[in-house]
Amino acid sequence: MSFPYRLIATDLDGTLLRADESISERTREALAAATAAGAAHIVVTGRSVPWTRHILDDLGYQGLAVCGQGAQVYDAGAHKLLTSVTLDRQLAGLALAKIEAELGPVALAASRDGIDGEVLVGPGYRVQEGPLPHVFLDDPAQLWTAPLNKLYIQHPGMDDDALATAARQVVGSLVDIVMAGPGVVEILPLGLTKATGLSLAARRLGVRKDQTIAFGDMPNDVPMFGWAAHGVAMANAHHELKAVADEVTTSNEEDGIAVVLERLLGAA
Image 1 (cartoon, rainbow, N blue to C red):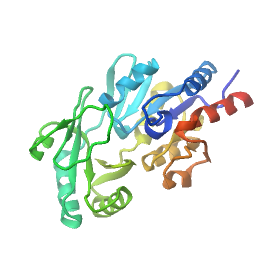
Image 2: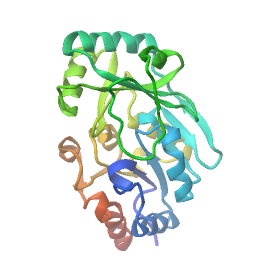
Image 3: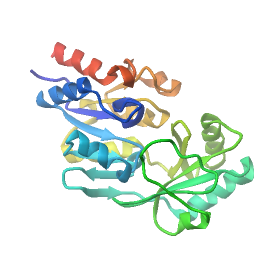
Image 4: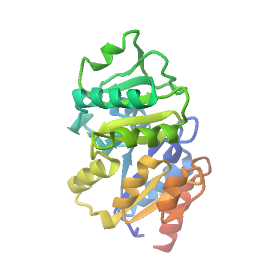
């Protein structure tokens, strides 16, 4: 049995993972069948490595993973960071000051660089429920004391889409702003996207973009869809991603990845 793509790129939250952070048996079996047929599976997630490792370990995943919105290429089998891009803290501070001057105060969190980098949470920042580790800080100045992959911002009077759009208008020439999920608006190094990290990982695997199928659910997956030959949005995906997708599958709770992979395997 063959498979029409050599690389399957999957986002995690809202895509490969169900709401309880589990991966269905059907999806596991479909991925296993596709890899047995010659495709490689690569996780491409906004989560940094410390928030991704336990999922990869549960999958028995030994390959490369793109983490931190493209900032990190991680070798899961060797438990080793291969590449890591950090956010210029002086530039990020300038961008943050401009955002707050225009939009008013924002709550702040930050993802520290490295394989064990902590997520630091400043006053007023609402952390998503779940088991992901984080450290609360009383003094926001502590956020800036070590290299960072990204900043997270929240605004008391604006929803995620409005905040991302407004912040991008203010500082889009300095940094990238992306909405990565509910309550998750991120400040990233300019030009950094999931497509950046995916292209690096694909080159290491000897795979081209025209041999890649990608699955996602949020606006931060738009560049990945632009890079891959075929982009599949989940039924639960953000409207911005559905607008650029080649197809829409069922939701992450309804084995959307497996539905597509099984069809492709059946047609092979």
